[in-house]
Length: 522
Image 1 (cartoon, helix red, strand yellow):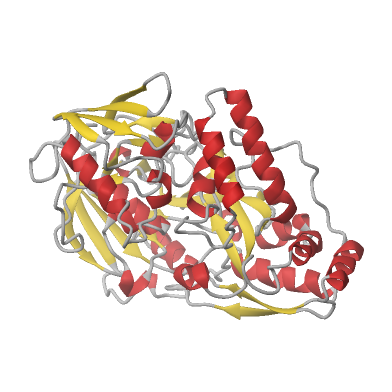
Image 2 (image 1 turned 45 degrees about the vertical axis):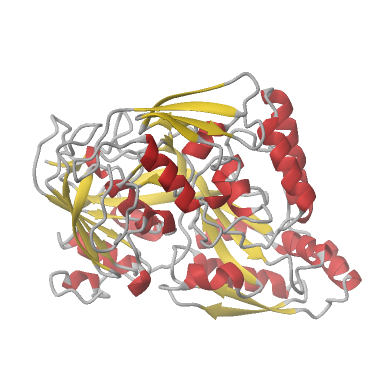
């Protein structure tokens, strides 16, 4: 960040940066009521002003193409400019957005979606044609858009507009949880024929485009015709600051009003001191080590099991997250619907780990662990796990990666890396990360019989029977999957005291997280 307007974003001042993996929340415990931060007195929303929000970014390769949104900064910008047909509520259920309603036939393989009246920033109405264009663009086999795997159940050749604002989605198979598809991460609606996303993006979201400099900033202005009510703010600026210390210092210096993703040490240092407000979203962001299951040494499930048993999860939560989280059990979505909470909690067992490694011919195993200061807790977790592995005779070489390119670097490269995830339904986690054709399949978990089980779960109308299929899938992941999920961390935000309306019960990736159209400056 080299913008002279924000010198604090370059300073490495009085706060030592504690980098690492932060993480999300199912229930908020910020200092407010009704899910809002209590920054001073509440009061009636006030119109006007510019809010500057500091996020970690993706460098010069950043784009405003919403179908490429991957980082939290990407998603926050995308949801300011665009809308989806549905989005996830705080409980991870699908909530209507551009879709006013949806209903299925009796066999769950045709769904009728009715759009609400909404307009794009250039005045054109949002129509069924735009929806079908957007979904067909995402599903383009030549592209790797994030939501492609989630939209896979839709037969887009057979689906059609049945009116200006009505669509019949024809599905390849019965799908009981089709509303989750509409809410899928990255499934934004763009105008038919949309191009030039970085120069003149046009959406139907609460803010319209003003300017964008990749890796530095994006400026948006209130869209007065927004279907859900015009934002209170006049303008919203996203400022890129990859270092947590830079975000905090800018917030303390009054150069930004919102700082995304603070670490627990920072939160403790400033909570209740009166300078800034700390918002904690508790316990829902997955913290993990990701093992590539398609290459040595992790193509041997005995090695993967050994690594599960090497981890002292409490030590990782206490050390890497400063205790601001709960232990994990190698499964995503703790506390979410369908989570297999009946499986025994894994504990460290170094003797069994050594025995498994010996049987796998990997007694003196050496492996590289990719990490980066890209997220709070990552570097600390890597160091702690390296020391734990040494007790089982495993040598881990910790390799520091670029903050700008880490997520793209580790998707296909390396063998072991630090990983995290925000909130989404367990169904969405599976579709986006664990199917053979998933575009963000970082563990390279590719099993056709597992894909078939997912399709079976999707097609099962009875909820109890569907839960049984999801449990069967999770038991297999627990036994031999590539995610060593050691914890779920608090997601921590910082705001200036004059900021109002920030939700404290909205996990990252859900509708009310980074909901800047509902925020105002007192």
